[in-house]
Image 1 (tube, rainbow, N blue to C red):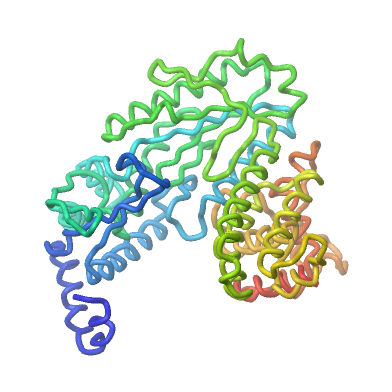
Image 2 (image 1 turned 90 degrees about the horizontal axis):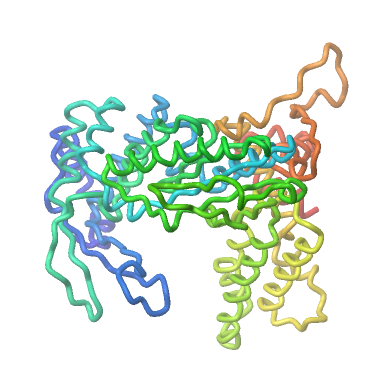
Length: 494
């Protein structure tokens, strides 16, 4: 049934669709036709040489997508109302994201550096985790979190008998094959079900139970210690790494050890006194995971001294690459189209993680500003000596420095309003009330914390408190996140 037909006849057929959805849920039987889909491979590289270099895009029936959405909303609400997911599980949850996960990890590392400690961080990689996990294990996990017999029957029906075919070049379709593991490609309940499946992974960590982060199938564990206790800390990391390996085998997943990363993060002064070559290595299943100078973590580059030079350099390369491709067609594009293209293809590179890599050196700040200036010149086809600031104001764009404050303010507002994610809410606390009234105490200020190093000073905790306490009272008392975003942007532009 085409989407156009559904849209045009929705008022007439809505009662019948509702009856079908209710029957599927109340009887615990997912319609057979909805379990058949086609897969269109989309290249991730210029000339893919193997299926691993393509991204599968599933084409599911439209009614199946609508029913899946209802199931997802009910499961998500049940999980959140009963607090069934670990507070350190950041994937596919309202108020949680890759950026909040990165904020938690980097803030813990900043605090460790402030205490003259070193941090051992290990980032695990699983091979095709969404496609290979065991259905029986998932159903056991669902039973453990309280799914009743009818719900389990519906989930078993939802997962079983899935058939897929691949649409190749020229539109040719392969024969249909049955999927016996993993979550269905393109289905909205899939990510939530996977979150339930992998949530128990955090339970096997004996040493990193409170210093771990899980986003979908991206697991990272870390411990901080005095430099002279580094070997003992690595031994505890190795013990938890072995537990992760055993858990993955029991659940039908494969740990991709060659892509697992390890790094020791500390201040430059501490690194000068460390001899990592003489330290015990991180080992998983007898394979040594070497310590690296920098690692990729959820789309960002973390260096061993918490410098953001490598990350900014990579961001710059990506932006210049996009602009280079756009310039080839610039003569055919109007100013408005160029603005839209830059907003869609360039601006996200500035946005992502900007609240994480605070504390940039003056050189890196200038580099980001020059990068934005280059994008503005492309939009207006300006010469290099043309004034940029008036054009930026005309576009209504924030500078990179203002952008970091914008996302810092938005994140702080959301955390204070919702107390989510809980691991960020723990970094912020209201200032204790005084026994007498002062003008400065009539606003909901946050408690300031002490720091010893610029690394911690430039982190989320200190910067969020400073920004929040400096905002006008009308701003901090704004309840609506949308109103707050608009007002904060206006405030920063002024």
